Every structure is written in structure tokens, then in C-alpha cells.
Amino acid sequence: MTPWVDLLPEILDNIAGKLDFYEDVINLLCVCKTWRSSVTITKTLIHHLPSRFPMLMFSESKTPEDDDQHYRKFFLLSNGGTMRELRLPEAHQQRCISSHGWLLTTGEEEFYTKLIHPFSRTQIDLPQLYMFEELYFDQDEWMYYGQSMRKVVFSSSNPLEYDPSFRVVIIWGKTIGFCRLGDVSWTRVRGWEGNLLDITYHEKRKRLYAVTTMGLIYECDIINEVSSPLSLSRVSIFPAKEFGYSSIPWAYLLEWRYDSLLMIIRERHYFRKRDGEYVCYGPYRTNKFDCFVFNLDDVKWSKLVSLGDKAVFLGFNSSFAVDAGDGVKADCIYFTDDLYEPYRDLPDGGGGDVGVYSMSDGSIEAIFSSKESVFRGSPPLWLQTSSLPAYNRI
Image (cartoon, rainbow, N blue to C red; front, side, top):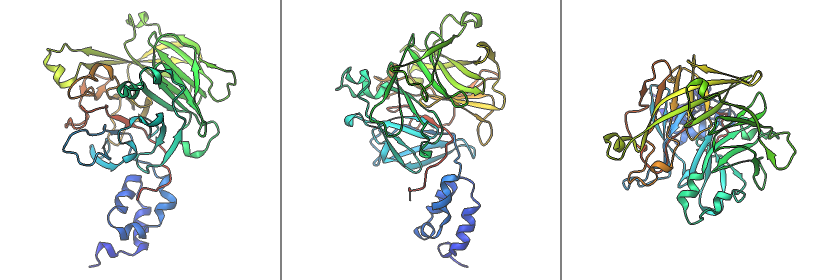
């Protein structure tokens, strides 16, 4: 019998050509050096393969028993939920948020920011963050600096297509800024009331949208607008009392259809320190979500009682929806912990408010049985389906 290592390159190429997912090709290449050098299809075709997204990327481990902290663990919803560990030194001691499967990272060193693809480890430099006033609040206080970056969105899914209309947009503290690839600085966006809760880019409408604590919805054209400084324009206010709300505790925004936005309100229960559940979850735990559709044409709001065959993913990632299947449950909201201040001083950290919320009955279940990596420095985050960059990993 011919040993696996001696399989003909033609046979290996034939096998590789039948693999449908990026991770499967990586697994094939990792078998041995002979296979890695023999498979030729990878270098030309792997960047066209889809990946088994969405997946959950855990925070960096801080425990003493972890000798090499250059690895990150990923929880894949497909195949019944599997764990994968990948070497990702580029994210070591970096604050991470995500959009379209890419990480936006920043660290203490001169306030650099980068886009990093966690599988290929492709890196794209972004401007430094000196334009943001929050950086000068206390430059010796790294914890404050690390917590200020809260959200990133792209104006299109793939930064490697070199689309001149591609923009990276972030919320940093109380500031919205955006840049094009190659810019030397970020451009500030102004003009809203209340505190920023979320931003999203509506690819079909070609507009950036934001929601604030008062339920105010704003929009801005960050592609063609030439005025300086750029300003958000108010388009609506959520009729909170009409839907039984006195205020909006926390909200998310995402493109829903060609003519609509989906706003999701998140309610949390806050524990007292003497509560037993405080030890398990930190200071709070999510109670429920409510979904509302804002029609951009007739400027009307309606409550959405079901997500149908879709699932929504919320946290320190750009809010997004996907079709159910491959381990993703329909009519559910997958959420991670995206508040820092309440648990930043806890001895064991925080980030335990992670789960799957069922729209049909309001139940919440755990995403995985192990609490590994949940209570460490920063919470896990979701990685969205993306076009993968050229392979340079192995």
C-alpha cells in the first residue's frame, strides 16, 4: 500500500479541487511538507473559496499555563460546533474588533491600526489614531485607550479589491472616523445628539447609518460627500413610547433589505455584588432582544416578531445577518459581551454575557459548554463571512 506521503501530486491536486471550504484546504496542507509542496491548486484558487463563517474568536488567553499566547482559539458553528486554534501573533496584546471576517487591531505602540485577516494573516496598514480626542484623555492609562475602540464597518466586503469607494469606518469613544486605504489620517464625522450605540453601512443605499441613545437615526454619504467637516443628517427618531419603551438601553443597527434597516434593542439585568449570579456572569446578563424595522422610503417603524430563516450576530463586530444552516439556527440572535466598563476591575475579568437568543420563545442558551476564554481581558467576537485574501499562511 502506498504511504499517504507518497501520493502523486496529480492525485493531491484532484483531492484539493474537490474541497469546498478554505479550512479544508488548510487541513490538507498541514498534513506534511510533501503535501504542502505538491498541491499547486492552492496558490491560485484558495482565495476564491468560502470559509465556514460565522465563527467566534475567543479573547487572548492570559493564564500562566499558556506558554504561547500567539495563538487564538476559534469556535465554528458548523459541524455541530468545533474548536480550532490558529497561530495569530499579529493580534497578540492587541485590541480587536471585526467586520466582514477581518480584524481591526490597535496597540499601545504609537497608536497604530491595522486590518488583519485571521486565516491568511494578511495585513493592511491604516492611519494612526491621533485625530481622536479620547487618546489624549490619559495616555498613561492603556485600559482606557484599549476600551475606546468599539465598532468598525466597511463600505464593501473585501478591502483587497482596491475599490476606490472602499472605506473603513470606526467608532472611537464618542467619535466617528473613516479612512480610505492609503490615507495618512482619519476623517472625522460630526453632527448627532446623544451617545453613539452602533453604526452600519447600507451597501445598497450607499449610506452610513448611526443610532444613538435617544433612538435617533442618522445617515451620511461618506463616498461622494465633499463638504468639510462631514456631518450626519437626522432621518428619524424611534417612537419608543409607541412600542412600550421609556428609553433605549442599548441598540444595534444593520442593513435588512434594500429599503430597510433593522434596529435591535438589548435589555440587560444588572446584578448586585452579593447575588450568586454576579460571580458567574459578572455585573449583568442579557434578558431579551426586541427587533424593529425602519423603512427608509416611507420613514415608518414596525416591530419584527420573527427573523424568519435568518440569524443575527451582535457584539464587538459589525452587526450582520446570515441565512440559517450549517450550524446556524434560524430566528435567533447570537450575541457576545460588548460592555467593558462594568467589569474592567473584576479580578477574573468579564465577558460572560454570551449566548443565543431565540426570537420564538425568548429563551437563551449557551453557545458552548466550556467557559474557556470568556472571562479574560476582552470578550469574544464574531467573524463574518468574507472573501479570503491570497494564501500566504503556510
